Length: 122
Image (tube, rainbow, N blue to C red; front, side, top):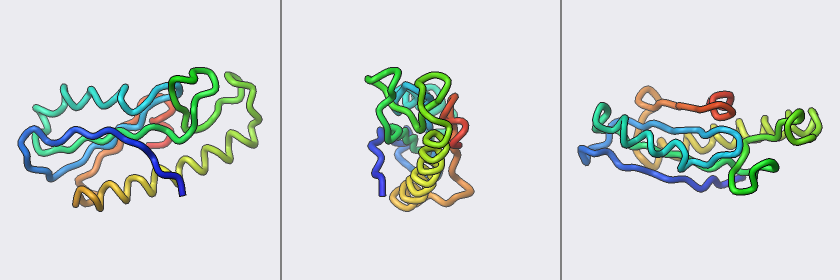
Protein backbone atom coordinates (compact mmCIF):
# COMPACT_ATOMS: atom_id res chain seq x y z
CA UNK A 1 0.00 0.00 0.00
CA UNK A 2 1.27 3.46 -0.92
CA UNK A 3 1.21 6.05 1.86
CA UNK A 4 0.83 9.62 0.64
CA UNK A 5 2.49 12.58 2.35
CA UNK A 6 0.09 15.49 2.74
CA UNK A 7 -0.37 18.98 4.06
CA UNK A 8 -3.35 20.09 6.10
CA UNK A 9 -5.05 23.35 7.12
CA UNK A 10 -7.46 23.19 10.01
CA UNK A 11 -10.85 24.94 10.01
CA UNK A 12 -10.64 28.62 10.88
CA UNK A 13 -13.62 28.22 13.23
CA UNK A 14 -11.88 25.46 15.18
CA UNK A 15 -14.90 23.20 14.52
CA UNK A 16 -14.63 20.58 11.77
CA UNK A 17 -17.71 19.28 9.97
CA UNK A 18 -16.52 19.14 6.35
CA UNK A 19 -13.46 18.17 4.35
CA UNK A 20 -11.92 19.36 1.07
CA UNK A 21 -9.22 17.17 -0.48
CA UNK A 22 -7.15 19.03 -3.09
CA UNK A 23 -5.54 16.85 -5.78
CA UNK A 24 -2.69 18.62 -7.60
CA UNK A 25 -1.67 18.46 -11.23
CA UNK A 26 1.28 17.01 -13.13
CA UNK A 27 4.64 18.30 -11.94
CA UNK A 28 3.26 20.01 -8.84
CA UNK A 29 2.78 19.00 -5.21
CA UNK A 30 0.04 19.25 -2.62
CA UNK A 31 1.39 22.56 -1.36
CA UNK A 32 0.54 24.14 -4.72
CA UNK A 33 -3.17 23.80 -3.97
CA UNK A 34 -3.19 23.98 -0.18
CA UNK A 35 -3.00 27.78 -0.44
CA UNK A 36 -6.58 27.68 -1.72
CA UNK A 37 -7.60 27.04 1.89
CA UNK A 38 -6.69 30.66 2.66
CA UNK A 39 -9.20 31.89 0.07
CA UNK A 40 -11.89 29.26 0.65
CA UNK A 41 -11.59 29.02 4.44
CA UNK A 42 -13.58 32.19 5.25
CA UNK A 43 -16.45 30.85 3.11
CA UNK A 44 -16.13 27.35 4.59
CA UNK A 45 -15.08 28.06 8.19
CA UNK A 46 -15.79 24.54 9.50
CA UNK A 47 -13.76 22.82 6.78
CA UNK A 48 -10.43 21.05 7.05
CA UNK A 49 -8.36 21.19 3.84
CA UNK A 50 -5.97 18.36 2.92
CA UNK A 51 -3.60 18.19 -0.06
CA UNK A 52 -1.54 15.03 -0.72
CA UNK A 53 1.57 14.73 -2.87
CA UNK A 54 1.28 12.24 -5.73
CA UNK A 55 3.27 9.04 -5.12
CA UNK A 56 5.71 9.43 -8.04
CA UNK A 57 8.43 11.99 -8.72
CA UNK A 58 7.66 13.80 -11.95
CA UNK A 59 9.99 12.79 -14.76
CA UNK A 60 9.74 16.23 -16.40
CA UNK A 61 9.94 18.25 -13.16
CA UNK A 62 12.00 16.41 -10.53
CA UNK A 63 10.99 18.91 -7.82
CA UNK A 64 7.33 17.95 -8.34
CA UNK A 65 5.20 14.84 -8.49
CA UNK A 66 2.93 12.99 -10.90
CA UNK A 67 -0.03 10.69 -10.38
CA UNK A 68 0.91 8.88 -13.57
CA UNK A 69 3.30 9.46 -16.49
CA UNK A 70 2.11 11.10 -19.70
CA UNK A 71 3.54 9.25 -22.73
CA UNK A 72 3.56 12.14 -25.21
CA UNK A 73 5.35 14.35 -22.66
CA UNK A 74 7.83 11.99 -20.99
CA UNK A 75 8.16 9.11 -23.47
CA UNK A 76 6.64 6.50 -21.17
CA UNK A 77 4.63 3.67 -22.65
CA UNK A 78 0.83 3.79 -22.89
CA UNK A 79 0.66 0.46 -21.02
CA UNK A 80 2.78 1.74 -18.11
CA UNK A 81 0.84 5.00 -17.98
CA UNK A 82 -2.49 3.19 -17.75
CA UNK A 83 -1.24 0.76 -15.10
CA UNK A 84 0.22 3.54 -12.94
CA UNK A 85 -2.94 5.64 -13.39
CA UNK A 86 -5.09 2.74 -12.16
CA UNK A 87 -2.77 2.28 -9.17
CA UNK A 88 -3.00 6.00 -8.38
CA UNK A 89 -6.80 5.87 -8.53
CA UNK A 90 -6.73 3.07 -5.95
CA UNK A 91 -4.22 5.02 -3.84
CA UNK A 92 -6.39 8.17 -3.88
CA UNK A 93 -9.52 6.17 -3.01
CA UNK A 94 -7.75 4.62 -0.01
CA UNK A 95 -6.35 8.03 0.99
CA UNK A 96 -9.81 9.64 0.88
CA UNK A 97 -11.28 6.88 3.05
CA UNK A 98 -8.41 7.17 5.55
CA UNK A 99 -8.63 10.97 5.81
CA UNK A 100 -12.41 10.88 6.26
CA UNK A 101 -11.90 8.38 9.08
CA UNK A 102 -9.09 10.39 10.71
CA UNK A 103 -11.08 13.63 10.55
CA UNK A 104 -14.40 12.01 11.42
CA UNK A 105 -16.07 13.38 8.28
CA UNK A 106 -18.73 11.53 6.30
CA UNK A 107 -18.69 11.09 2.53
CA UNK A 108 -21.56 13.54 1.98
CA UNK A 109 -19.47 16.27 3.67
CA UNK A 110 -16.34 15.61 1.61
CA UNK A 111 -15.30 17.39 -1.59
CA UNK A 112 -12.58 16.24 -3.99
CA UNK A 113 -11.16 19.18 -5.90
CA UNK A 114 -8.54 18.54 -8.55
CA UNK A 115 -6.47 20.61 -10.93
CA UNK A 116 -5.30 19.29 -14.31
CA UNK A 117 -4.06 15.71 -13.78
CA UNK A 118 -5.61 15.86 -10.31
CA UNK A 119 -9.00 16.49 -11.89
CA UNK A 120 -8.71 13.19 -13.73
CA UNK A 121 -8.30 11.39 -10.41
CA UNK A 122 -11.00 13.40 -8.62
